[in-house]
Image (cartoon, rainbow, N blue to C red; front, side):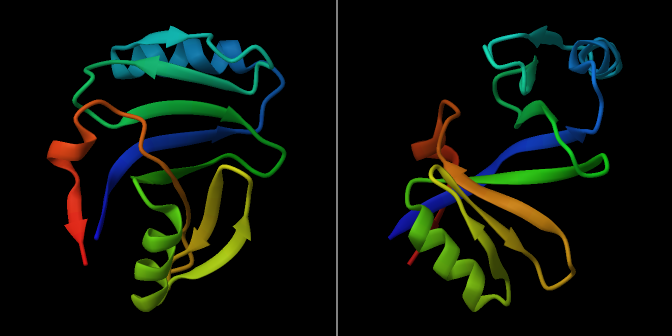
Length: 124
């Protein structure tokens, strides 16, 4: 058995200045920008810890939004979603990129938020 849940909303930004994007999104969402990534590729918009994380990510492809599903068993969650019709796009060192039957891409990542064990969905 493993568990999973919605972990984060990722705002992919094809921009040169991620800090300006963070100013907009933190004001729009009522959060506070956290410049925790030393490489400057990610900025988290901090809000209520019970909500999914909101993360800005600097990207080369056109701007879009995707979700992260967090889990305590990445291979198990990937297999479960493949049985539902999803396909693996790319296996990375710390996450797996998948595509839903609807064409939407999303990532399977390790659990990061507090309360995961109590609030995630259990799967056989």
